Image 1: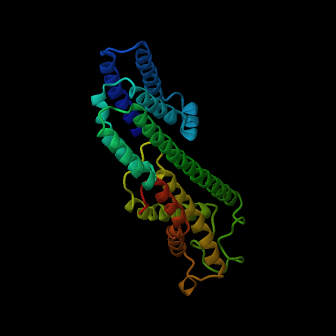
Image 2 (image 1 turned 60 degrees about the vertical axis):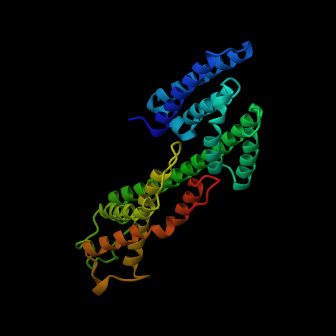
Image 3 (image 1 turned 180 degrees about the vertical axis):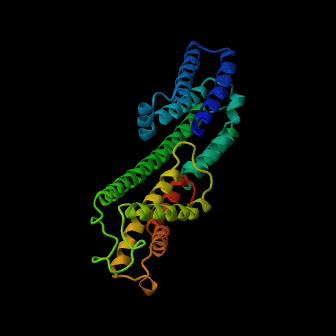
Length: 310
């Protein structure tokens, strides 16, 4: 199943090809015929970008940089701008209402209201002002592009942070697996029970996995406030990955504090595996306290500039 943005781009391409075909059947000047041909080339490029993901390395590079998505949408929107000059006047009136809805999403409220008044004066005039409509659409496209660029940058920052932390945790667990005196989770001397009486090489891995489970369950707070994510760049999955990795790190650090006795101790000095893993889960779930700032910033960015984040 193709990503949502691919399906949406292909649907827009299909619709605009029909509009261009209708426009080409009218009496057009040589300049307008060239515009219709340019629209066709732009739509060909958008369709090619949406239909051919390429080999996995190139696909990942395009996903990270957003080059394929941006190219496809930019081609569609440039074609839409070019169509303004060639479609019949009666069709242009029908584009005003969708354009105003888009403006209210991506433009600041004051700017969107100014454009609304200008377009209402235009629709009440005797003659279509194509240059006004072209300028309005261009402003909306530019604001929409900036918004999605911010989302992509935020998504990449979250993934870099989660990847770096995950690599550190893997390094620590592998080091502990080779030498369990590294990141010791049992008190020295071995007089107290600890993970069934000993700290095996898999102890750190167990703690991290249980903490990761707690972090994943903590993502329910994020999902509960989810509305409709944007089709281009969705930061939801990177946020969930960050919560899982942060939960694993919080569990490991928390269990170390419990074992050291600096913060609190298990009841009746019970340091069995079940008790310590329960602590790991609790600390993993508490990652919500650390990642809620990221969640708040995500809600701010997911809300288009013309909207207020909940």
